[in-house]
Image (cartoon, rainbow, N blue to C red):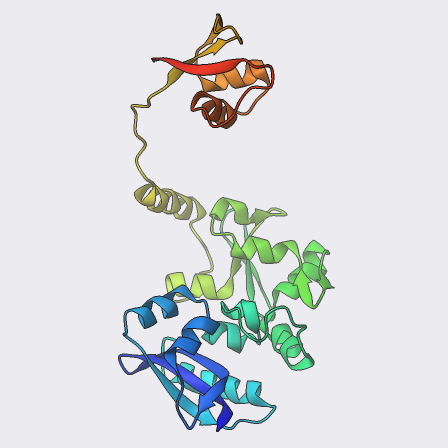
Length: 280
């Protein structure tokens, strides 16, 4: 007999995902159904590798299955299971916001979800002046958007304000707005394990640049740049161009189109053709 159920994807005795399905048959569930229904790359890869188990946690759940799933997520989250959908669920988000293409994809959010989303907006914001001195700890981004930025609005159930984009931005220089630096309370707490009264903004920017330089791929100083020759329909050389960029400017084409024409993928409209010349 087929029943609706709440299931968990488990690896090494730790749950990595909590889901809901209508494909629970006699207390068992097929891995392939989870693999098909959900598109989170980590889950998919672990299932392909055979490193996971699908465990039925609650069987025959009623129409309030979402609350049952939410309770299970909260419970596992408190037990320090590395759930991939914990934060989405705790914020009251569903469907594609969970990293899935499942049942909730494209459907409207209900009142329960909207209320949870409203609660998730109340995350404290730190305001520092240009010299790194703490000015104020705001109760939420909504408060900053309404009282400081004065651009707070709700569109289709989602809050909109510049403060949210500033907080999400990882570049410190981009956090400077209206003569103040804006940080998420949790971000600073995670970095320093306390909330400092003074931030050394200059040192933080230098540290950020060093970290970014370590992850950047080194550029190859040697680049193969070829000249471009233009021929008419009689195969007579008309003009030579230094490279694809120069040819593109002269012919009013993007340089990528020039390379395609030189490779024979595309043709010029005037029956002329382009050929790579010498390597610079």
